[in-house]
Amino acid sequence: MSDFDSQEESNYLLANRFRTFLPVVVDIETGGFNSQTDAMLEISAVILGMDDNGILGIEQTYFHRIIPFEGLKLEEAALKFTGIDPFHPLRVARPEREVMQTMFGMVRDAIKANHCKRAILVGHNAHFDLGFINASSERHNLKRNPFHPFSCFDTATLSGLAYGQTVLARACETAEIDFNNDEAHSARYDAQKTAELYCKIVNTWQALGGWPLGGTRNS
Image 1 (cartoon, rainbow, N blue to C red):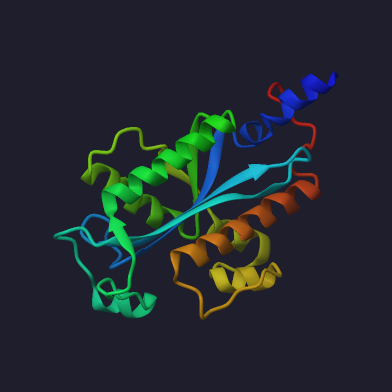
Image 2: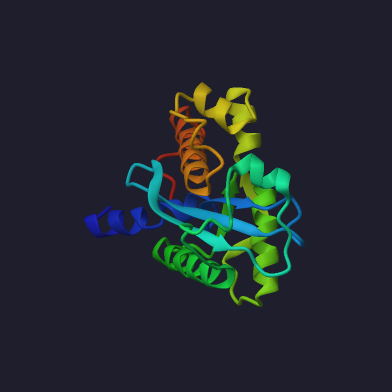
């Protein structure tokens, strides 16, 4: 194989690994549990990449605070749990539509760069975050939502299999990933730790022989 062919194949490693889906780690902090009625307060998206040896890692992170959309609920118990004050005078936040459009654009650029066809959401209890993304997309009539509408990779399930733990903090501890409970329940921090956990599970599985290092588009 020539150097050109080798480089060409390396450009497709991530697309090959996940059947042309780009895994994007997402964490959302909200004012409640109902994606149809409760407000989004923070969102973070972590774009993953793959090196020439097929090792998955973090490439790019997006984070922003969100101004609660008018008419959506803010449950007191949820705000107490996250510690978020949506109306703090020093809180830098942007409208939900603007935040989602920016994030969608970043994800679409990453899909194209990695020769993928669509993004697939990775999250800890992933259907929670996917539900809020889909609800926001519909609420603002956003076109070209880059995420698969119902499929996702759930690190609560994967870490239950890999480490016997389903709580993010405990799964990270078992996986020997540093976790600070004082920083938890921030979308930026939880997305970062979820990304580290997911990458470790995928890379460990590969090291154990679960995925061929030399996998190609035709394998």
